[in-house]
Length: 150
Image (cartoon, rainbow, N blue to C red; front, side, top):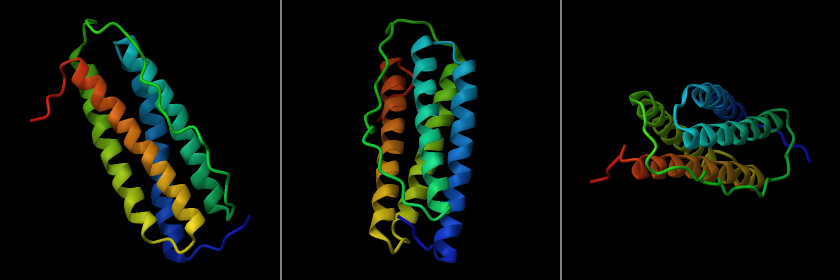
């Protein structure tokens, strides 16, 4: 299926593309920097999902409606709850949590600007996955004592 994008829709997708490119790079780089094996796996999994998001946004930019992925459940890797963490792991998590908040917000804005319901549904699906990424990072941090909500 093909779509015709307005100038504003194209601009929003270009912003999303930039955000997804950054997420792919950050998750891949942070996976290599993470000290904790559980965190490394979490970041590697998120890097793969972010690449899928980038591919979807690129398809939309080319005027194609891609099929929606049904893989929206991010598996929380299991690890040793008592593993020692370096300060850098906390910094990596904090940065990625802030990144996910920003990216989710960017999708939220875009969803309200698209006329085509199919595109809105796709962007909503990706936004849900972004929120799940943030939730997984939050849960990891909370479990490791790196984040205490007040």
